[in-house]
Length: 152
Image (cartoon, rainbow, N blue to C red):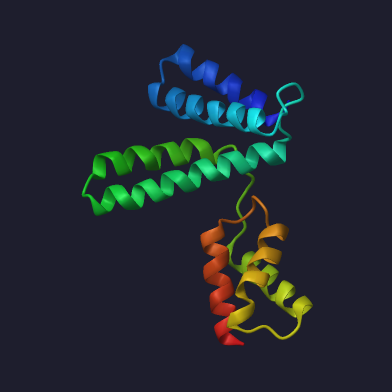
């Protein structure tokens, strides 16, 4: 079963059970997937699971950004709603790598690139993110790359 089909089945089940929070979060995600299919002209064959994971990762990132803004505006009720949606969406993401695994990947990429300085951060980030696509949050990777560059 494709990931998109699983999300739709879960959306239908949440609607039948009257789980409004899950239904709404999955409906927004499903619409984002459909919009991405339209943008990429893949309406008939649909997105691959990897492309669907990219859409989910974007949705989670948007919610994290919203949480930060809601907390600055002292709207903890809205921030809590966004956190709940992240938990619902995270179920469809592949298991995230531990900090140690991310650090190991960063060190391997940096070793492959040779001498690396602060100026090379973009090059290192691009290589690490391509390698860990969907398996690690970009913020975690960025912080790890900065730390490892400073150490070397």
